[in-house]
Image (cartoon, rainbow, N blue to C red; front, side, top):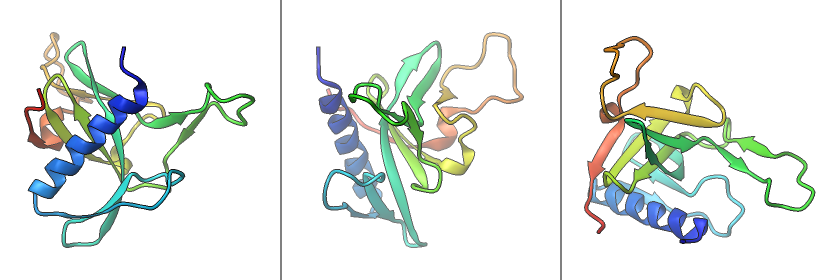
Length: 142
């Protein structure tokens, strides 16, 4: 079983690679305690980016929109969101090779987010967010 840090590092590297392929400038903060994994400049201002690994679940890409501190001894809070600390989530979904960029303003839930890959079986249209609308690129990492 792979360590969660290794999985996160793989996602961050895939996202950085795709962002550079787009021609965007990337700035990486010094140290481990920054809430943003990197800053991107697409030519119209700087955006603070938090990288996440997406899991394919029941036709959706699902990812966490908060940090968990439950594994720390005596945590002050169990979960902490990123509101006011980042501008967007960048998500890598390994089974699809898909990299998505999602503004934090479009996050409806403070703990998780789901973006549909497959259409809903009941043909629902309202309230559905399609992953394709946020996809930057797909890469083959295997």
